[in-house]
Amino acid sequence: MATSTARLFSGDTPRNAYTKALRLYGTPGAFVRANLIVIWLAMLVAVWVFNPIKALPYPSEVGQAFRNLWNLQGSQGLVYNTYVTLKLNVVGLLYSTIISVLIAYMSVLPIFQPFNKMVQWLRYLPIVGFNLVFLTLFTIGWPMKVAMLTTGMSFFLVTSMTGVIASIPRMKYELARVLGYNDWQTFYSVVVRGTAPQMIDVIAQNAAIGWVMITAIETYNRTEGGIGSQIYAYSSTNNLPAVYAYLIVIGIIAVIEDWLFLLLKRGLFPYSTVAERA
Amino acid sequence: MATEEPNNNTYCAPGPIDKAELLEPLLTIERLGKSFRLNDGSTLVVLKDFSLTIHNIRNKPQIVSILGPSGAGKTTALRIIAGLDPPTEGCVMLSEGEGKPLRVVEVGDIGVVFQRYPLFDDLNVINNLIIPAVRSGMSKKEAEDKAARYLDEFDMVKQGLAWPLQLSGGQRQRVAIMQQLMQDRHFIILDEPFSGLDPVNIINVIELIARTANQHTLNTFIIVTHDVTSALIISDHVYLLGRERDAKGNAIPGARVMKEYDMIAEGLAYQPNIEDLPRFSEIRKEIKMVEFAKL
Image 1: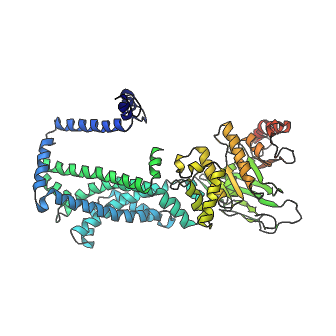
Image 2 (image 1 turned 90 degrees about the horizontal axis):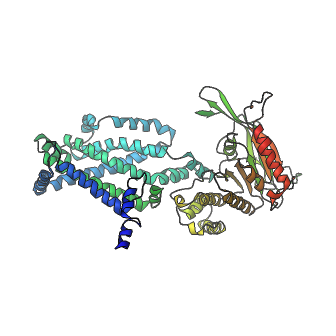
Image 3 (image 1 turned 120 degrees about the horizontal axis):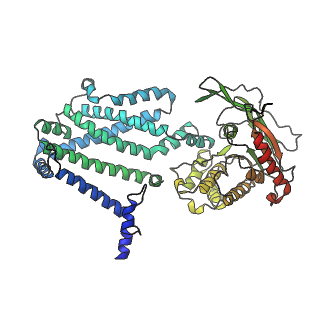
């Protein structure tokens, strides 16, 4: 018994293990960390259950709305709308990642730096303000939604990716130079390979921005449905439990997305785990 | 923010070595100058008339130290010698041995072991040795054999598959040295290799550098340091870098070689118990108490 307890608390006493959670950069161990997540979730649910704000529906109401949405068929259903939005998010993220990585990589050449800076400035502008431009260039519906999401996310991705490249220590480039690397070899070794794990982190962070944009973009393009259009529709009819049911779906997808990106990073770049610990 | 001054190079022209010399120069630094234009429009002169020549020593490698207090311009000198920065004046020329002509140094000619030992963090230790060597034209088989040999020599076989972030400072230093040696170069600059080390590790690093340098008589190691004792122990020549002072005692801008200690002529180089010799203590005291105070 004592041995299993010691194993759970990484050889520490339970009291010591939990005390470590209060220390700066403490290392309380995996079991205590898991418990902390459960405790925080329980507190969140408690706040939700006992909240005094009437506009926030109770968990039971949201649960009922979730069941109703699940049972709805076709374009009104939860599964269909989640699929539409998830597909849009994945495609938009893929396109914006490709475009942004290219623009960010080009920032190593001074000739492209002003263009890169201009793209970064565009992140301050709301993408729906360019609705008519997109409408002129793309067919309404799926192509327009993908284009808007890709463009909107790219502004943020380019900013973060360029920041990652700019933070490469000069010594890394110089190491490559003294080892006789040519410009392309230096670029590949120091910029492409050297920043790959951070780029995945950046994509994971900006995927969240995609979900914020999706609701706005799908509100303007409601022809195919999607979570954004559903949130808009249920908000208009004051069906808040349904709105929160969809928000919870977004939250669950976001947690899974974060976890998948972490797995991808650790799988492709095992040294990133060491870097995280360092 | 400072900008580099353009080079007004008038001193250097590549050419053959004078064969009449018994010991031919391997590396010549001629009247090197470096200044930076500051934001307020003034000019900061870091190096001026900095000259030294490293000669080939028969049957021995060359280990020289550029010694100077912090802020003397050592790192600026290192960067120019390695070809990483252009000088404002003068030039650095090297030869790859007897009969080979002197030529202006280019980046990549001289290996650099930087102070913080940067490595490619995405490559494990053995690939940090193999991949740069293959990129520089070595066959994969040769690079693998050579890397295995160095790992054994440097007592790093167990760490061969480790990531650089898993290594201690001393281990990173050894990998950084091996990485440069893999390139088949004879010239290597080490930036503050004794910095932050305890006395036992300083001795280990001194032995490592001496052992590595002794692998080839053309090996030429330039150590940039402010550690007087270590520099005197390991070097055959020690150059003091500093600034002259005017009559009022104010430093004149632009560091240069203020004094050269020929440890071979002093009878100190290659001595196993060098620290026990009275002349060693005298020189060390002279540098620490007199020369450093003047710089």
